[in-house]
Image 1 (tube, one colour):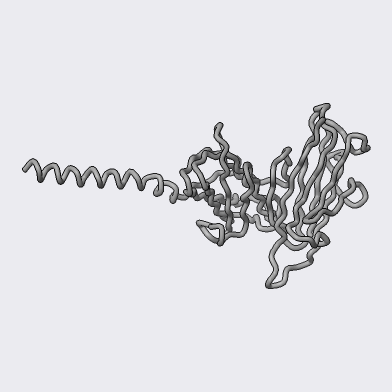
Image 2: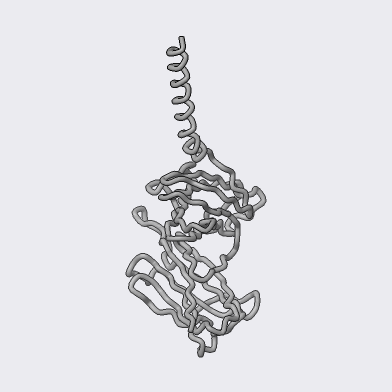
Length: 266
């Protein structure tokens, strides 16, 4: 009887252990509703993913705001979570998505406002190739604030535009600022970038007031040095990116762009 009892007990313990091992996997398969402007912190084990759903409010004006996903690692240990987004697939993957941001460190993924309409749902997958803890927030904004060293990835639709802003701090060690735009192709004629210092709230960058923008191998760069008339500490700058593609043919895709702000210091 004791042997039979011990055998049953052993089987029950094995079963419990199996269930415990499954718990983290089951939890990562549960969709979480991500409320706008409400950051969350979560953890994942190696090669696991978490699923999120964001719903656009019914009173949102179609095409007014971009939907921005802000993903960063949390805690002292540096990790590299990725975010993958779709408006049609509840659990988007690396191979089945509309937008993905897979840069190292903080990922800012922008869904252009042309796709943002009332009551529309967007689905996001956060994936970690190693154990990680991350912060995630979704927000609606007419423009996005660039932060030093941060990489922003987004798809620019045909005839689309994206507006960024940033404020140069008062650090006397800063000698220049650079806005880099990676177009992902040597054909940079498909896109234009304008960078200007804000005069008032109505300032819009354009060909008449932009700093010099130069072509690089895979994109555009605008660099403003300390002795340039547009260089100003504690001033706000605007960056406008325009797609010059009038429409996409059946085999073409939107331009995938990566924008970055760099500050050079003494």
